[in-house]
Length: 256
Image (cartoon, rainbow, N blue to C red; front, side, top):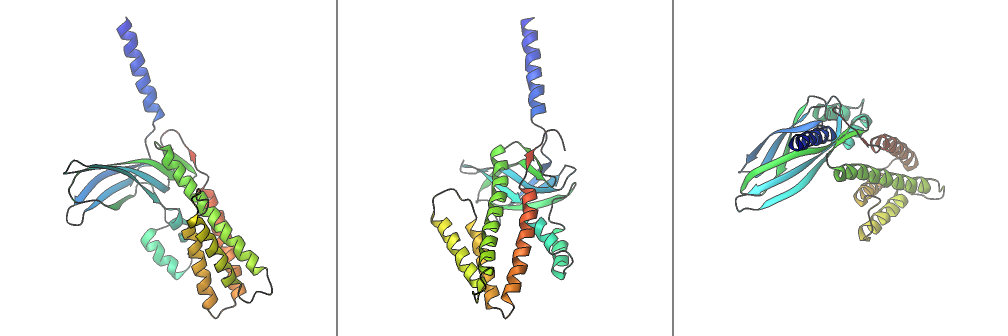
């Protein structure tokens, strides 16, 4: 009788464990190693019924000398999704859509992911443990990775807000003959300060530097700089709004 009770408890716990770990909405179907290029090609399928905006892969590599390397790879698609919307209706947008569609990873779609490895690979294990969806939900068997996705998006928003506020302040000074260059210098200074700081990054210095470089290019052009800056801040406000939607990700339960 005691053995039967223990068996039933074990079965029950196993069933609960299965229910607590719903399937992730994307899977690695196969992998192929090319020893000539030391590249592994993963075939990844979206097995959910939703567009995917990001996914994380846990990877384990085994080599002929006995070494085992473990790491993770995050594929973030939000940038492409936003770019597709921004370029909609333009010639560049048509070219972009030919290559990337609307930027998302669609239900039923299978795509190749090429990843470098070291020479002498003998075994490769790759498991998708986080998937973020277009509706703001996520499947997660790796909550640290899910938090990195959310944190990365929030940092991008904070960076764009900082840059946009600096531009708007420069634009508000009617006596500044070149507000784009003024803003570029201040944004670049913020980027440098963040790079030299050992504190947790609340903004992305690379993103700030990209904006600063764009402003320097604008300053060198023979255009109405104030009109161009106003158009840029409007564009950035729209981008922040779109990205903010994708930064609100909640963990979902059950199959998708």
